[in-house]
Image 1 (tube, rainbow, N blue to C red):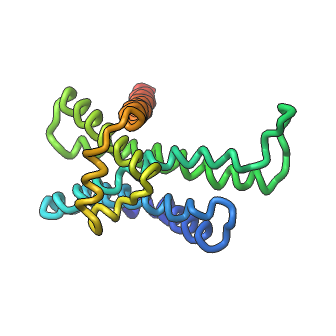
Image 2 (cartoon, one colour; image 1 turned 90 degrees about the horizontal axis):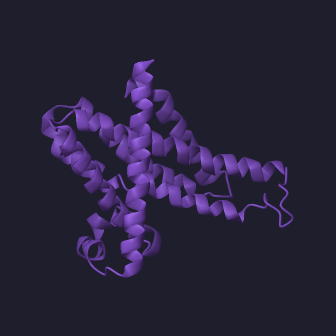
Length: 206
């Protein structure tokens, strides 16, 4: 984690700044914190001895959905007065500053957090088919978690506080809307992983 101290320091400063000094999108302090946790757990998983792997792996899996969940926060951009009905854009600095504070951390956390999955997969012995299957299962589970997080307002920590209620929401109540959302969100995550894989492959060829 020492090599990434700049990233972690930046995340901490962002969390503090958004939580205590920013009115617009102040909720992003908590959301980024929840998305930061699996990145930390993932790094610890790769650095510490195998005796801690089961616990760190469980914590990583528990909090990982908070990373793709951040993408749903992009809808809050509609609250900004940037796009006008006449088709023109406003150049008001406060709105564009809020735009930056929302979009930049989402892009960073999503690509770093989801890109980390490839590093985690390298720590276990899996062939290509098993890796693809693992990503598909993870995308599916995350899609369910994002659904109950966004529409049922259930946070990751509630799986520890109210396990029965949370598990019931995870595996039950399969309405058509839930099926469609989970399928769509699984596809979005797999597409992001595909893009990250493609970019990594291109960088190795250069």
